[in-house]
Length: 241
Image (cartoon, rainbow, N blue to C red):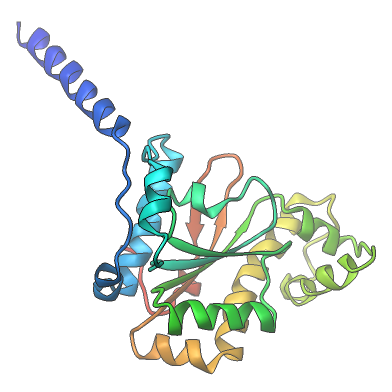
């Protein structure tokens, strides 16, 4: 009898959860909510969103309502720099809605002057509280850089990944795209280098981190699982919960 009762309540609980997920979540971030949010809270919101995405329970959003709600202003909680790859949309893998995050995308997820200037706008002027640099597994841009690929303007793009290649120990062989371990080590090194490069080249962002106004993090998105793993040695102004 007790087993039947427990089973009955389990069914009810499952039905309630399903009903909640079916209700569109259209609340958007307000100016007040953004101002009150800390870098740590913004970072944890990204972690929680990714957990929902990877578990297959992303919020059912009413994007039409969100279009209307954000038409007069935006107050994002964070910025994500990621790759051009079509499978790596931060809005999806962090389970965010319209107006939740700024996104910078470029093959190889590196940051040159123009991109860093955009981050300064997003954080200093628009109030975003966390900056996440997110690479991804089996990155085609990284593979091309590892092989020294050249083609038009892509040659310049891939050249930006050379510092990361140099950071991988010479003992890792062969040093080309046929070695998945080498490719991943370069991708990891590129995220770490990009975080460091952003903070070194932007006094604006560095000062915000030092003042507790901004958190900067780096991580890796796994194409096979949907999970983002953040690197502890890239955390600035925030910590793992």
